Image (cartoon, rainbow, N blue to C red; front, side, top):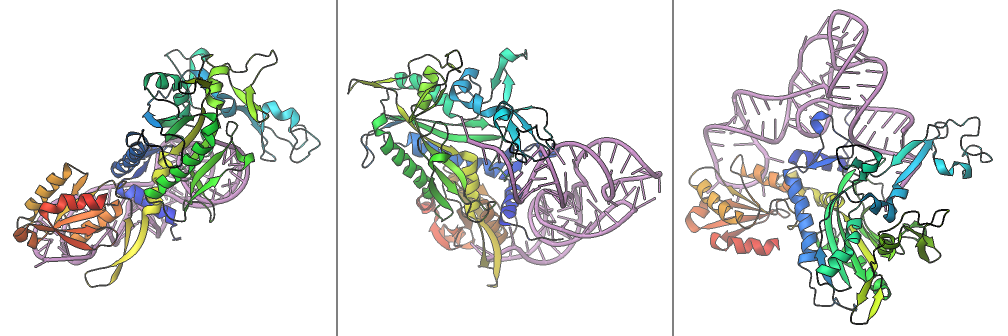
Length: 487
RNA sequence: GCGGGAGUAGCUCAAUGGUAGAGCACUGGCCUUCCAAGCCAGCUAUGCGGGUUCGAUCCCCGUCUUCCGCUCCA
């Protein structure tokens, strides 16, 4: 029963076939929610992260104010540990939100929090609580924890429990003071971090979109409370523009502001950069990045203790004895502005991106099936990844037209020369057309071919991936020619 | 977590209660002055575990993975 493959299935198949993405532990039957990046995939993802780091951190101009904004700002980086003090996750709110005792009803398929049972209604008999109706068939309470638990030290007892971070952000907040007291930065400034995070997703699904181990690219941007709205708007637009600049320019990308009832417990404003992935239904979008206005929630939580919403602001959550439910560090995380002689707790704008989701979106966007004429002029189908040159795993492929008459030697020399600047691939096997098509599937922007003319006049052809148009270029000018077209 | 479908070669598929086949890909060779060409040769598979059976890839049970829907979702 041959059913037509969906676009997504063809993309997944290409990812496997060409070595972009493999299922983790595949030879043992696979493991749900975990994925490996193959030789091409690792280059793609690395290029993506490098582009982000360069555009956000090392390439950032610390001395020129962005147009229309109150000041210039600094950007610095951080790389913190995946396992942190367990109290970090209590103060941040993750412990409470990610950790529940739940029961399922086998009859009505509903799921309930054990601590809320006395206040909840049975879906089938609203006059009773779940479990009290005769048809109810509840499971035993089960621990439900979205954080990966582990143990510090070889002795496994409750006092040694710790968690793999569910987000990289908290490592930035707890290092806020370290950074601003050592890096000579003044508010406003941002701290960037790229790293792995872990969540025990209930339903890992849709290829790498919802994975249990994933990589985040996060910025925590600290600013004066009164300036936070303009900075929020700035980051929101800038981050959207970043995806556009790398090729997600189609109508499949959008920037969407959250409704008030959609906001997370900490947020007083959030926008998502979303992409219409092929695995979603028509009109649906999946989140690539969230840009959140987190106010002073995080710094205050790590100072005073876990906060809860209190009117328009936040207050420390307290137990029945009046003590903080989850105490913070007790350290003062406020900032003193020398220029204005003002002390305040900075507000935070958080652009939080998923590296794996971005890589997947760029792959989906780049995946193209078109037709090009063969040697007889008959249109032939081909698959081509139209990746932005910055993201392409291989920048240039070098071929001898045929593997004799000195062409391989000349091509190899060109390869060795270009290799010093870019990731360049050399291939002399098979027909030239087949080699072009192979590179099309890998997303290589340019193929350089040494032919018979090359041997006489020291020129080569440069073939464009997207148009298949060939340009004859002197070998002497090849590197600068490619540099210009790759930028 | 629930319900349903699926799992055979790198990919896409076929077949069968009696030991698995194709196309493409891949490797080597010949040939070839530019878009998956031709010829020759070669490599590669029944997710895992158990059961029924003389014999299981096929039937049954379990499990894992995956897809769809629901549920859930910082």
